View (cartoon, rainbow, N blue to C red):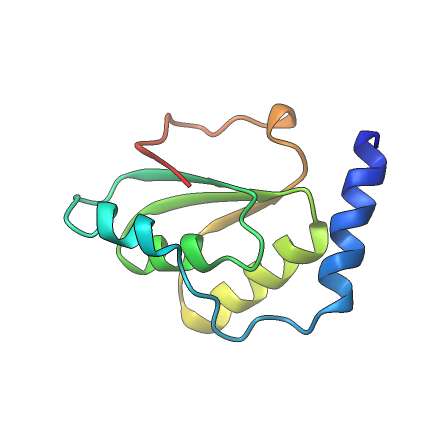
Length: 106
């Protein structure tokens, strides 16, 4: 599978599902990060955005990336309705680098 095929696969997968109304964060992430002070976080493969939204809701500055533009657009829309401020970025991680190094990689 080449890069374009992978992008199309993930876009098609997310487009075929209804948007997640309340995506849940990874349980291990919440256990490990809950006691840490906020900082910068990078969520690679953010999908529906559970980790990114949870982190942003606790004051973290989150850059969320996914191969699927559909997933990223949905995360951005959901974040706006919640007043959360993750920074969704479509595309491959090698195409963009965060402005600052992340303390957390999800």
